[in-house]
Image (cartoon, rainbow, N blue to C red):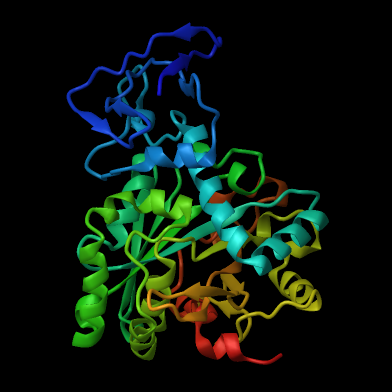
Length: 388
């Protein structure tokens, strides 16, 4: 495939990506790694002969690594030499990848799509995402780092770690580049969301469960290097498992069973309630609206999960189920994904600010272990089988 490089003035200029190391990403195309000079323009990479598609876009995700950055994602330097976290270079590509991840998610989860459509209709097609969440296996390089590297490359910053001893999980969350928060778009095209990535502590599982997980991650080759690609295409990086193996994992860890059949797929997206414009900005009213519309909310620990400081309030639906054909030909219904809602209240030191002056930075940030632990239950058999 040949490419043109369009400058901001839409004039065709030759590709100049000379660098120290070349990276071939797919049979369709390749490009070289480089850091963009501090005063370079915002470039768009345009295929000359083949039409654009989300599949072609996703192919550019290969081999992300937190110890290096792609050309489109290098931090910019101001004229005085200071560094800042930025998504400016490569933003269209990055958002396109998130859009592909979301498309897979919406195609598989009718509840999430219906609720997003409902809220969009009330909010005049305007809503923001609080965070996106993913699940991983913490073994053989398939854990948090396998996905985190992609987001770090595009200006995200690693924040706090959360531990869930009873579930044998750990998680990290990542904050978006500061300059992405001013976006006035909606959904994926709005302010970039936080990213929440968890991993199963495989070494703490039973020998039988460890053997199954290691079998598939090891047979996947370098699949962990293509985590974001797998998520955007909706493909497992390993072969489909046996139904008996899924049952073994489910008997010990429903999180493990979910990850075995869903892989790097989006586990959930979260609507930012306080950024809504109507009465739905109050999460209690939003929950009532969702239930009145015929959808079930996760009741584990109560529908509304509230942090000890009272400033982070969360709720979520019960996950959808999807028909899955296992490698032995057995077809069974397995849990898929869900949608969450979060309201972040204003921090005490900013309580006297006029509502019109309150920004996201004035609100409670981060996550709460106890609440997240209950949100995880949205994919549990108990919640999926609950009536009413």
